[in-house]
Structure formats: structure tokens, C-alpha cells
Image (tube, rainbow, N blue to C red; front, side, top):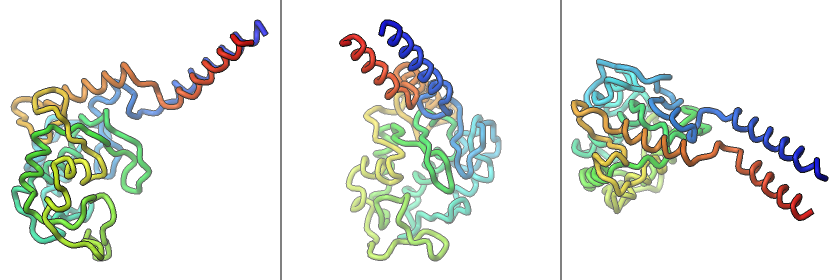
Length: 259
């Protein structure tokens, strides 16, 4: 028995090492989460300069995950990227629509969302971001500017009627004001895209929340935010799959001591 426990330790440690080495590039990989693009339908494989980014996407021109043509499509009422329109309940107010354009630019163009990227099994993408801490003012202004616009759903990720080729309100739904479907800023920012965002208590410039709006002349503040959360993950997270092995190691050690 004296030799059994050391041999068991070596075996389990070998399994741990194998699991550690087999980990894919996913959230939890620490600093590898900086300056990355999602594996999704219209994203570039690596961020790079795009001098001709269009309109509201220009803040990302120095280091972008989107192409110039993608940025142009994001500004159209019905984009060929996804055949999706925000005007499903009539013409959306311009003050509201600009937030959705900015949201799309952030999604398609930002290289600073690595700490929140998750794997998904969807036909049009293999990765998405989840629970990105959106700065308080950005979420509140989005909600304030869209309160009087109209929609028919509180989750825009799924459940649409696509028979016409573009998204339409499903049978049984009614077009009502945003405030009806999203009674609070958190309800809008967190519910709209299946928790892609979460309302942060931090404000712009804190270095702890992602800004949807920023002045590129002052630099990209989201680089600091991504660095902070990547470092936090690197310092505190175990690669996936190691916890059961470490638990087994601890239990076998207890049994050996009792024996």
C-alpha cells in the first residue's frame, strides 16, 4: 500500500497534465483573450487596420474584426448580412436606431471581447460573447432613446417569422413600445440578445466596463477593460475539465490516509 498511493498520485497528475495541454483557445485562456476575433459568420480571423470602415463603425478602424463592406451593411435598414431589420414594427426612430447600429459595430468589429467569448453550436457562428459588462450610461441611454419606438418581442435572438426572407413578428405578438417589452434598462441590454450584455454598475472611463460609444481620438478604452478581465481569468481560472480530476486526487488521498 505504501507504493500504491505514490503511483496513484503520478497517474492522476499525468491525467491533469494531459487535460491541461488539450485545452482549446476558449475563455479562461488568460492573456490569449486579448486582440481576438470571434469565430462567426462575418468576422475576420484576426483584427487589423481598416481605413475605410463606414459611419458609426469608424472607432474600430485601427484594429478591427470587421471589413469595410461589413461596416457598410450594418448601416442599412435591411442588411444582407443577416436579412434582419429593426423596422419590424414600422420605422424605428433614428435616435433609437443609432444604438442598434453601434451595437452591431461593437459585435462585428471589436477585438476586445475575448474574455466573454463562449463556444456555441450554431449554423452561422461557432462563438458568441456572453455577459459583457456594458457601461451603465451606455445601457441607460440606449433604453432612454428607444422607449417610444416599437417592437413585438423581448428577445431578438430567436422566435421570428422568417417566411418572407426577413424577420417579421410571429403570430400572436403585438407591436408595443419598447418600454412595454423592456421596462428597465437592464431588461433591454440583458434580455435583447440572450444575455450577450449585462448592465454594469461601473461607468465610462472606469476601466471595468465595455463602452459601446467612445471617441477614437482618445484611444480605445475597451483595451484596458479587456486586459483587466483577461488578467483576472488568468489568475483565478482553471482550464475546463480539471476540477473532476483534482477532486478525485483529493478523495483518493483521504482514502489512503484513512487506510
